[in-house]
Image (tube, rainbow, N blue to C red; front, top):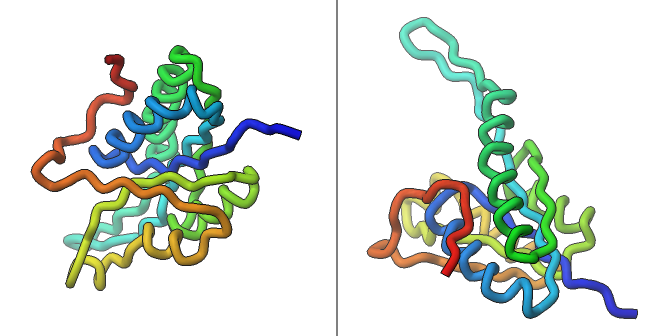
Length: 159
């Protein structure tokens, strides 16, 4: 029995994620894909500065994520693409893998920032972890640094 291909699309609001969406916009319709947009809220440890403790405002970050994902989903739907979205909280790689398993994804699509050297050592690589542990294929896109621009407003660009 045929079923629509399910693609989990991990988005972080970066210009690389915007490039990923532009690419998926081109292929999702012809390949009869259902896109599940995912944004992960990574835990932010409390920080102290000048005797003031700054605590993570998860509700504000969740609202910002909703304001990012909802218009993207609406724009994709207006182009005839089947799409849903969700927000998860936890370590990014683990949440991406869990969401892929729970949604029965056929593919995970994500942008990579291409960190190397000290940056990769300090921050790790979410993409690398997902790539190594994913039970399904992982499609990665990396926007060359010279093409990177600040993330565009949450819309999908028409041709």
